[in-house]
Image (cartoon, rainbow, N blue to C red; front, side, top):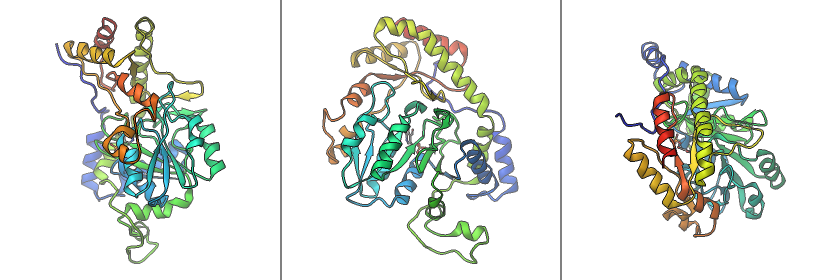
Length: 375
Ligand SMILES: Cc1ncc(COP(=O)(O)O)c(C=O)c1O
């Protein structure tokens, strides 16, 4: 019996053709023709004034922190149930992440706890749409407006997700995407910064090009380029953009398959969940998710350990995440302590992610469902 792996990046057919064209036609450095095509594609999808491909979502988050001019002494509200990059970007600027717990239903930043965490030093709210299910954006945007805070959406999970009909990643002044190979659409390693507040566009181009105005130079707007701001090399090669464009153009097939897998898990596992005290993902009214993650919340850590071990005996690889960031070595340096974010601490012990990817076959998924329900 073959193992059922946890994830394999989708391959939809035209990736090699586009990569070959990128190499043949050139140039293959950043911001070539395929990068421009990806920018246009993402701008068309979201209506954001500007998309900029980056080498990762991590780097897009770092660009966002630079654009906000975060400084030592500044505070930024973040959920502790996220990937480390969400907070590293803040800490790299010397600012302090302030951990605010998540909601027990969506596992997103709990909007009812945000306001009490705001101080005169608070500059921004960085949120994550966990599994591509939207945060409560009406409430969060209203809080941000009342206190004059920037909102950054870490939308690593949520490309194609919607809140009340509007694409995720279009609410905050800045949003970030991931095209890591664990994501629905990927180029191995990659990301994007989506700029919804046009005031950031010119400076973002500079930060992404090593702190220079080389982008303006390429457009013929200046006759030489020079160092004008802080920056780094955040733009991917056009070879990666070629691969990515092929994936973006095939998004309908990828999304359809992922939704089918997600819905089948949801229907097939509902009776088992009701009996065993496990809970399946909750998608509130008004939220459309992109089929990125299918998770189970087991009743206890022991039940999770037993399920993972049982799945392994059936050659099925399921995984868990995230470790609470406020309790990590770095999180504690920022004042994190046990009991500070009880929902995160509880959920991170109980969550299991099941295999969900484009090429997962119906038979493989049936094996996963059978193995879960017999546990
Ligand atoms: C919520 C979140 N933010 C950021 C990242 C970082 O993405 P990347 O690997 O593209 O840097 C991830 C990666 O999985 C993530 O889950």
